[in-house]
Amino acid sequence: MKIINGSRRVLGRIRDFGPQGMLLFSCVVRRYYLKDDVNQILSAYERITPAAGGYTRGEIDRIEGHVYTMNMNLVSAAFREETKDHKRTIADITGDPSHMENDPALNLDDFLSTVQCLVSFITVTSKELSDAYQKLAFVAGHDSLTDLLNRGRIEWVLRHLIEDTNKTHHTFSAIMIDIDSFKHINDTYGHSVGEDVLIRLADIMKSGVRPTDYAGRWGGDEFVILLPDTDIDQSEEVADRMRRNFAEADILPDGKAVTASFGVTTSYEGETLESFYRRMDSALYTAKGAGKNQVILLRSEKSANN
Image (cartoon, rainbow, N blue to C red; front, side, top):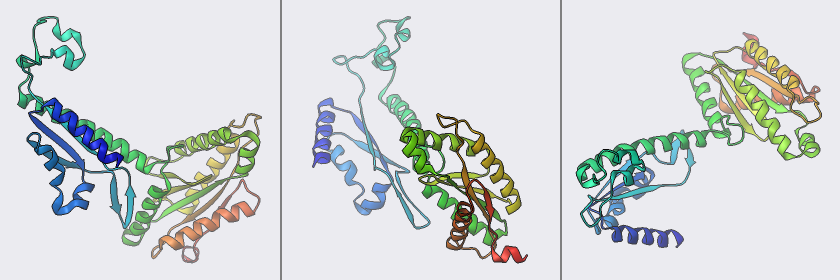
């Protein structure tokens, strides 16, 4: 009901404005949902003024059977050419008085036609929508605290790397990381320090991988790093270097070291997402069970026999 009432208020303000035309941008989700009824978006506006609409890639998507959702959006803009009864100077439009230095009497009627207004609006709006989508795409795929990839995105990458291994025979390796005694850190120093630990260690992960690698927050204090075209021995070197960098980082207020456990494994042809995840998880918990602050390699039976 609040959405309906809000829409009515917006339509009332547009009607009072008396536009000569309307331009609307809606996310493509509306087209998917409304199908044959998609033009009902425009009908309410066309009763006020001629309206045109466009659709842009929206805030919900289905990838490999997984649905990623965000809020739907609808952007509407009313425009009209200025008249003698309703004049605005270029300074009013741009907010920059310097445009008026040469001719203070210049107004919008002398500067932009309705068509020029529309072209200008479409150009600016398209850029704003593109910028907004890029920001939304980043937010949808990244962890808000660490700026690493989030669980959904890292799983998507993992699935595609496994498919690539089966199709092209290109192997990849993975490092699963768990911060040692993270609950104790939160309980001892407080959650703000705990968050700072996650952020600082995430920065070490970012600086410790190649541009072609993928570092993500798996959840809580667990992380996953995916290394395309990398064998298990190379991945062990990456993991051990990162383990040392973690322990040497000055993060906690009393100077004590923050350590982590690392499980490393590599893919093989015929791999499934489930089998790879189980092996990756087993490698990590073997490392934690063996005393923490160490790197454990877990090869598949197939790769061990080759």
